[in-house]
Image (cartoon, rainbow, N blue to C red; front, side, top):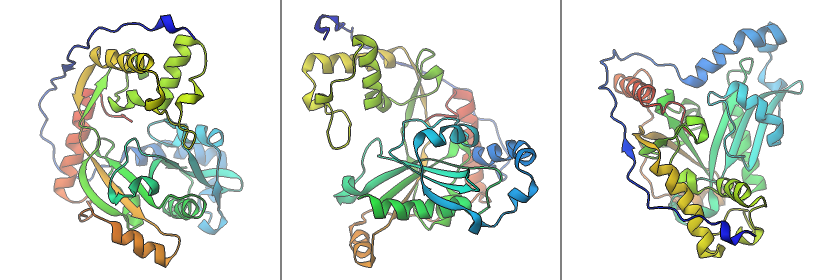
Amino acid sequence: MKEDAIPSASPPTAPTTVTTQPMTTVTPDIVMSHQKVRKIATHEEDLQQYGQAFFERPIGDYTFGPEKTKDIRAFIERYEYLGTVGISPRWVFGARLDGILACVVCFNLPNAFSRVLGPTTRQYECLIQRGASASFAHKHLSSRTIALAVDWMVKNTEKRLFCAYADCTAAEIGTIYQSLNMDFLGFKFGTKELYINPTFKNGRPFSAQSLRRTVLFKKWWKEEYNEPFPSAWLNPKNGFKDMSKVPPEHKRWLYDRGNRIIAESKKVKSPPKGKYLLVKGKDKREQRYLESLKNYKTYPYPKRDDPKIAMMLKEAMEFAAASGTGFST
C-alpha cells in the first residue's frame, strides 16, 4: 500500500455562487413531464419494430419478477429520461411481454435515512431510485409493476417503507405515486444546492453529499493505489464504507479530494422535490404497527391543472435550464 502517496490538500476556498437571469413571465398551463416526452420520442421506432398489435396487448399478458441490473441497463438508458441507471440498484423488478422488457423499477438504500417512523426507520426505509416503461407498455403497467415490486420487496426483504421523489425540474408531480395512494409530504425535499464542475461527472450537476458515496471512494482509491478499496473498511452487512474503520490519514485524503472538487466548482440553487411515502406491512398486524409509527404530516396531492402547480413546474424548469441543473441526480 502506498502510504507515502497521500497528498496534502490546501484548505478549500468558498465556491462561486452562480447568478442566473430573472425568471421570465409564463402563462400557467399543463406541463408535460420529461418522462412522458421520452416515451413519445421512442413511440415511432418501437411501433416499427414491434407493430401496432404489440401496443394493444392486455395487461394480463405481462409477466412480472425480479431482474438483474445488467439486463435492464440498456432499457433504462433508452426509456428513462435521465438516460442512466445511476448508482447500481440493490434490487430490480420488471415486467416483460413475450420476454421483452416493458417496465422496470429499481430500489436502493436512501442517501440519508429519515426518521419518519421514528428510531427504527433505518431498518425499513428503501428508495425507489429509478423507473421507466416502454412506449408500447399498457397504460396501467407502471403502477402495476411498482405495486407488485413493493409486494416482492416486503416478502423477500426487511424493507417496509418505500420513498419516492417527484422532480419538478423534470415537470414531475408524482402522478404514478398518487395512483398507488402513497402519502405526499409536500414539495420541500432534496438538496438545496448543487455543484457543477466540467471535470467531474461530465459537467452534470452533483450534490456535496454525493462526494461521500462508497462507490466514489472505491473509484478514487483504485485510481490512486491501483488496488481495491480495503474490505476491512467496509460494513460486512451492507457493503458500504465504515469510516470509523478507516485510518485517519486515509480518511483525510478521501475527504480532501472531495473538498477540492467542491472548491473548483460552481454552486447553483436547486428547486425542491416532492416526496412520497408508502408503508407496507407483510400482514394486517404489521401494517397496524407500522401505521402507528408514522410521525409525519401529509398534504393534498398536487395536480397539473392547478395554476400554482403549473407555474411552479415551469419556473423550476426554466431555472434548471438557466443554471444547468435540469437533469441532476
